[in-house]
Image (cartoon, rainbow, N blue to C red; front, side):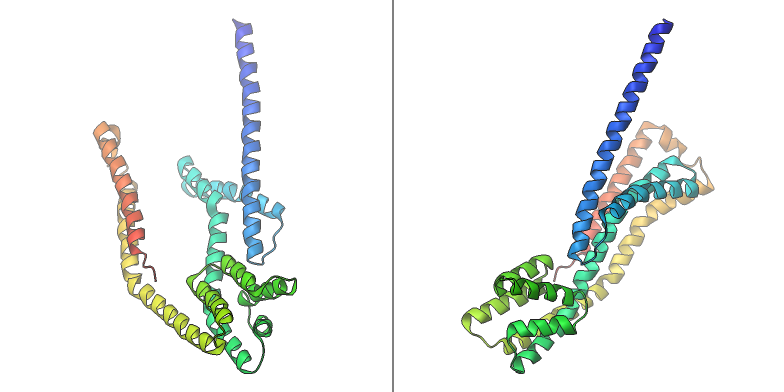
Length: 280
């Protein structure tokens, strides 16, 4: 019997060793995949970060959040939630930076079209206007137009370069600009008049977007506050009187009601986000 227990213990240790090794290997592969994707996204934003640094960031961020969550709450389940947030934190950071860069690009597009309009009126060609634009404007517009100029110099057609720019910086404004330039070149239209109308159109769209954002700000804040009232009430009552919800936690019907309440709370928050979006 003792020999059987020893064999069982050895088998358990071997399985645990190989199981942990397999999980660590899969974890490393997953983190390397995320790091590769993040590195390519940074390169699209003209930010060059070594993949080793990104891999360390994806490994360290969950551990740091895990330790911080445990020291703040002294509870492992809260620490695990912090670790999950830390695992997705680099992705959220990249998305935030990319979104802010695209928004700045659209705002710069109005000034860029005005500069190109002045260059065309001064007798320069469209390609020369793009070169002046890349020199006069700041990032990110100067970076994207500079890449467009380099593509044209190596033999890419202007139409194809504009389509690639539209794919790199997808937005209705950029699609409108690229399509207008291509159509004007094919039909022989006056690009100065086209750019003047584009400036007015894009400027009106930006004003309308800011107006909608301002008008819906109060409703969005109210929705967030209302969504947080339930969890805040739960944690405050638990802090004041820890045994207040014991009757619901111990009873099967009470646990079912709590589960339904959590699901409905999450569903309501998602619906508020969906209905609160206004596409322009």
